[in-house]
Length: 410
Image (cartoon, rainbow, N blue to C red; front, side):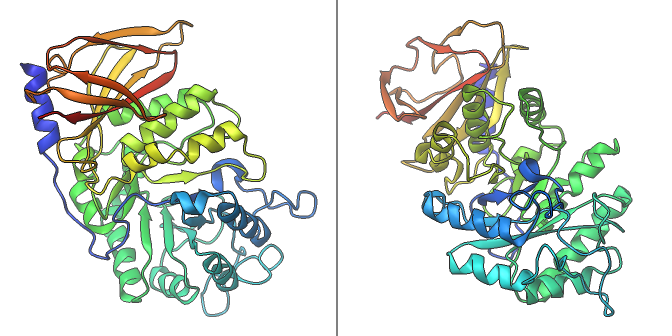
């Protein structure tokens, strides 16, 4: 009965406070340079991997030719280390002339010619995290500059600033961006810095009113420890941030490290599946020139992308957890019909043998008297129909995710 009441509450409660710019009605999808390429500015000795217009143009090309654009990935996002160390005589940001000789506006034009969109990075503080010019005292100038360059998304970091100023300063940048009249998705890191400085849980209603997506926990690293730590944070849901996800505004657990170096195949699949359940922005950070076929197949899995992009925009919540082992997550979907849910069963245990998890929909708190038709999500394989009280057993491999779609039967 407790689980049933909890599930009913979780599936019916969703608060919506929307940033009214008409953007990001589903979680943004794209590619972001940071995790894979960091702040490599050595174009003399490493021209193929340095932060440069050449890198972003190549990734845009591959997003089109390798099927990522057709799958829904549309943003090519620059991260830190793109500008010159000094602003120009009128206080405007300038792209590094050696690494971006054509300028950001020309790069945006190139990306747009591919049917994609360009994102850029700046910082709320006096300097970016890597020491480049920040937007402190220049927010209006920078918003106008980004608009004049036809930028489509702005990631606004929070290094070298006072987090206590963020509830006031981040809305100011949103005001100046909207004032330009040029549509730009606003990606905030405001809750992350409040968390990092051990401030009380952020006012997520205010964050939602001002941002299209927001980071609220530590940067992802290329390891299962990092990914599972983020998942745990989302399971705890401190401050109730899950309820604020929905069309126009999304909790951002950071980039996908699928295809990089630190995760096994099943761990890559688990990150992708959990990010889909979270209704998270799906921002790849992988070298698309050398991504493996297995990682590419994960990133292009249309069934999992559909869960992420479901128009309802519900964020999965953790129904319960057996510490260190099985946790069960539920995400309400609009499609293919009302009452459909995605259920993720995550096994964090690394003991080396699968965990057999036996349950029933009734035990999980579901109530549809006709039971449910079930499909395994990753490969879209029918699993059959189950009465409400009918037990079934799921085998979940170590550090992996089993996901299924359950549709109510008449």
